[in-house]
Image 1 (tube, one colour):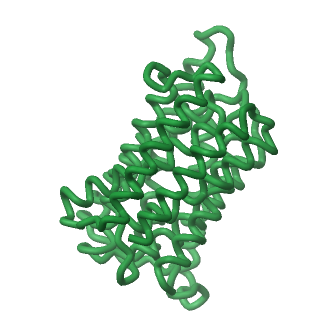
Image 2 (image 1 turned 90 degrees about the vertical axis):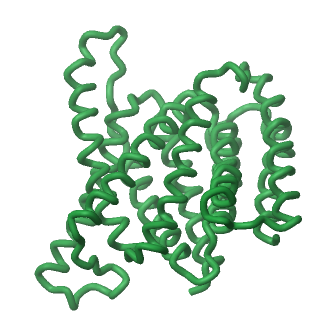
Length: 301
């Protein structure tokens, strides 16, 4: 399949993931939510690895995970560490920010990915891509103006800072994905399976620490299990598998795949306005559409 349809498929599931993420985090502590979602992903891939071991012919070739060297495991552990840092920052931000602001901020990730791809991978943007980057940046500034109406001052709000930091880690993860799937020729299933398992290994001790330390803080935020935590994990599995497959396709430049993937912003924005009843939807619409237009120009370039 061509990289563009795969990227659009990833964007669709990523939009549902963003929506479920906001629902799961409302009045909930972050670390247990991360533990449940990463635990779900790890359980799915562990089950698939078990099936592969017992009856490999029962799985399609795209879900088979080849043997991996110790160096390969170390490379995927590093991938998991980068993603863990990104998720910890973005989950904290999504918990405290309206999703109609958080999702567009996260959508700027392709800008950082493209900038790094230009510097590190020698990718060269066209004139349209430069115009797309400029449009996205101007729209981001417009969104910051609207954010002030809700008391969110982008230049000093710590949750905006967390979202930007998480976005930067996400961009670094995207570049590393291209290295893993391109130059190192790892299969998408290999990358997704082992980094999902290693993510659980990283978040489990943090969640245990939260559980042991929660009684020392007042007021205590009580954890409430919601099915959206499982659904967001399943949506992420679908989104990431399509994303990794797109990067493996010929012509699937990380700067283009990451840009198209962020069309998920429209789904998350609509959920914020219509599902979560967030304010200033009409005023946010123009800069959000500007961000999406910038992404489209980047793709067309």
